[in-house]
Amino acid sequence: MSFAVGYKQLLGDSKTMDNLEKQLICPICLEMFTKPVVILPCQHNLCRKCANDIFQASNPLWQSRSSTSVSSGGRFRCPSCRHEVILDRHGVYGLQRNLLVENIIDIYKQESSRPLHNKAAEQHLMCEEHEDEKINIYCLTCETPTCSMCKVFGAHKDCEVAPLQNVYKRQKSELSNGIAMLVAGNDRIQTIISQMEEICKKIEENGKIQKSKLSEKFDTLYQILEERKKHLLQVITHEKEEKVERVRSIIRQHGDHLESSSKLVETAIQLMDEPQMAIFLQNAKEMNKKVVDLSKHTSLERTESGYERMDHFFINIDSVADMLRTVDFQPVSEVEEDEEDYEDHQEDTRHEAESPQGTEGQI
View 1 (cartoon, rainbow, N blue to C red):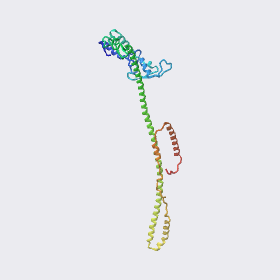
View 2: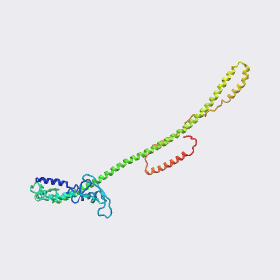
View 3: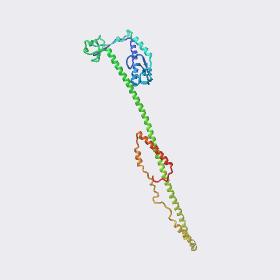
View 4: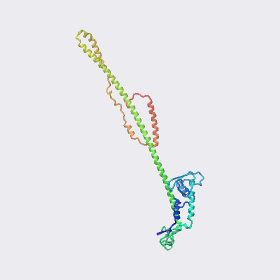
């Protein structure tokens, strides 16, 4: 079934009224605003009923205005610009009425009711098969608008039909409800998106916090290793200095003995060159006694075998290295236990550091 649209030539004032009518259409019900009209914070308008439908769909747990208990506010998004509208405990009834728009609608209806500008008579869909017949019924079987003549004599005589106005109102109401549901669904999706964006933000913040905590813990390990390294180096240095000092003392003893022996040898050689036997004999006895006495002191102190070795300062880090390689994240319950154990270990370490210590042995 095809049909043509028959339009009469409209006057300039009629075109102005048409443009005005487009500005007075509610974006939800697609009808002209009905009293009272509410104005949203974003300056867009809605029928109060449509605004309340969206609000109820977006806030299903919100208590009605007739409830005796005090209810909290809620929120929804403007269907025109998606601006978030936050309401108090009065809900939609707390929004301001747009009296100016209501007055304009009253004036428009008065002007539209004049016979000269009766657009309902000026604009009608006309049947293409029956040019003088208006499209005034709806074929439910074929799901298309048609005229009475098509129902009586034409292609739709065996079909089920209904008044065009009834089907129009019903389908327009269904479409309006569908739009309201979509708007409410979009609002819920937007809320979920906002929540997900907030979760992403929290994840970023928590990730930075955990990275900082992890760095602090590893910095603590570095500090402990540096302190332990410093302590062990001091132990090695202490023993090295003690050994070197002892060996140098023995060297000095041998040097003194060598110097005394060299001087005695030089004196004895000079005595051997004495040509006068009487003078030689006068000093030979005492010289022989000095040589014998000095010879008896040849068993001077010496270091033990392997005294120079320092390999007893041996440290095995294999087990510690293997343990460090297994460092990983733990469940929260285990972390709390480990923190308590760590605090106890720190306390024991402080007590050991404060208590007297003997000479360090093998490490």
